[in-house]
Image 1 (cartoon, rainbow, N blue to C red):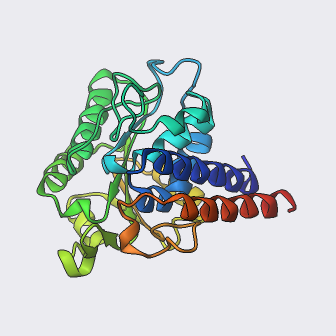
Image 2: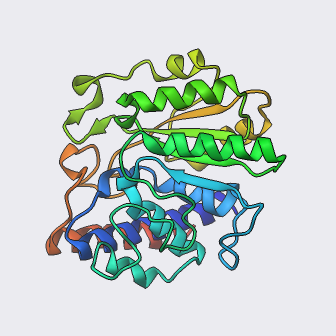
Length: 279
């Protein structure tokens, strides 16, 4: 896809996020919005997946380690055609397949259930190791939050990934700088993030703007070309990206917009969509 087409899809993903969190009256918009571009790039450009055959054996795998940002993943899956975008309005409702965290048993396109922070990368490492042992050629991707990497389990998993030279594993860190309690460097600083992954024998790619498709394309192409070691892509993003009053505001980590805020947000996204259509 062209960058323009990807940008249009990212707006569609953002609309799905806002639709879902507003309908649920709960959820996590901030970190879902910051990762909208990487969700879009993964499902529309990078990964070998097929909505018509969600369980095909040679598909690439994705694990959402920061599971609370499920609205972003769900919206990308819906935009890709795994299920109708209309389902976003059922987010977190009783009887809906769109639970607060991804559930592999109920939602098409989900490769692993995730919830407790730090655990997803361990699952992804297991998947990547399994592929190596079985001589399968699929790749495994996992998305972590920068606050999440304060969890010790992240580094246990990284130690094994580096030791086993899992070059079919791509770890992505959404470095938007904010977690539920405030700025990450004031809560429990994980900096310098790149040096930590290098110490665990990762090839590290730093992306200055993780909301820019040119930079994401370059990073993922480099990751694919890297052999003999896993890759960590550390991407700087804007929490709440795309909604003016949510950007870089820690309060939107886990707050749903009210009716007025929902209307404002959707108006901004529709204007962004219209502007892209005119290019």
